Image 1 (cartoon, rainbow, N blue to C red):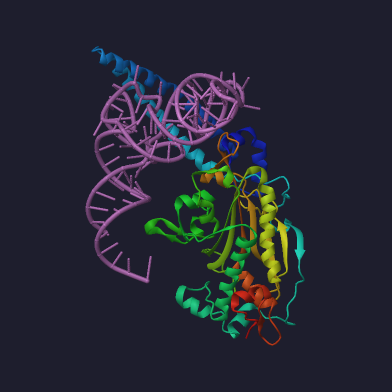
Image 2 (cartoon, rainbow, N blue to C red):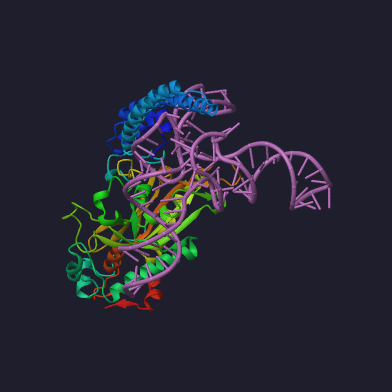
Length: 423
RNA sequence: GGAGAGGUGACUGAGUGGUUUAAGGUGCGCGAUUGGAAAUCGCGUGUACGUGAUGAGCGUACCGAGGGUUCGAAUCCCUCCCUCUCCGCCA
């Protein structure tokens, strides 16, 4: 959510933002609602003031044993008008808020303007795309052959779009989680959290999943709770509606969580095997930082995710998203794609974003500056470090051998009892 | 699932219809005192919105959320949410 005063003072910036991001938001409607709201507010405040002043007079009159019936009759009328104003104010405020929630965050000045993902800019590449096998087969084939992926079993349990890992496959998944968490907590200074995997409506609104994505999430209607689509939700909401002492910043959390996504309407494209599933594991990083440092923190956050891929020896590239591909809430975002030799595709395994104070304003995330002064909104950042399913895809395809086995990346072996090869 | 208690400012804690413009305390800030500190004393210290010049000031709202009664609600009534305690069930 943007500051309404900012929008009022910079309508041109906001108009350009809406266009650049390809959002449909009616700025003119917002501005006129805002004006109407303020006009009503001034008038109703004046009436309320009158009521307060007169009420005190009535109080004094009564105490002195006087007759206040004339004043009371007059105030009855004033109160009726106030009620009328409050009703109109409520309606205008409701609509104002609805429109306000459709105004996207302003991109950082370094974000390239572009229409869609084709205009994202690749900043750097690491590693050599390739495989140990001369002609690697897709992961779903070798996974089934080796008996480490069981799509059929998962379908029996939950339906299509789910995956079960078996034996060394399950061990690989668990090893990756441990490896990533250890890297971020021991070397990158993050505090590990094991949060709830279910979140309430307020939390979902705090990070911006609601109202937009209500039907992309799995819901528990009975309790109005949602299965989290990303660890960002619990991690960012730990301190919701709280003022954090300045000396505790930066707050850096890392967590393993499963992620649940309905992916409604996405059938048919890139959905084979593990490419797009309704449930996948992820290690997520979240930072709450002072505004002045947030862009430096974005760079280090991205570097933290890259470290994981480098240690695993997986070739990747880092892109900066153009305005048209940038999400609603983000001011700047780097995507990290890993190369997978079997499906011959770049697969997104991490998205590292700076939301500036856009999320913080919604979620009520403030900090008390150390030197004193008013509490300020923190800047929030998050990034995957990294998503498991597609990382597994890349390992199964890039580390595949002509003998039909999978070599375990060295960094992972300590997490798999020293296992060197899956066969 | 059953029974009970409770939600007040950064924290604690009064307050059951009209000087509460939320007492008192703690914490915090400034000042006095001191060689310096502790203690003590004085003053100040919430958020949001509006108005105003992004200043001072002024105004309105906010005592879990929403609604109602009333000239007037933290205070009375209704609905909902949350927290805690005990019991039951349970990994």
